[in-house]
Length: 68
Image 1 (spheres, helix red, strand yellow):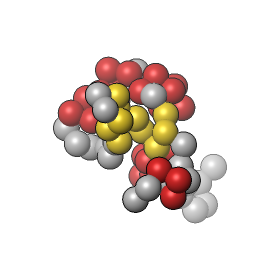
Image 2 (spheres, one colour):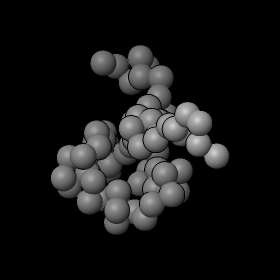
Image 3 (cartoon, one colour):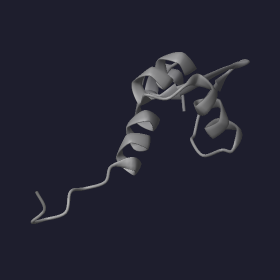
């Protein structure tokens, strides 16, 4: 896939960690364990907006019906 076809913004680890509310070290651990997908640009590691949204969606727990 060419860079021009890629529509999702690539975030640095500090940017992605801030959006997710975790530390950079936590995010690095997920990357090391291959728990999240990432993009290598040379030596730099980036996380796409799409991946960040998938992490958020995966952790979303819906409320139970009838509970207050």
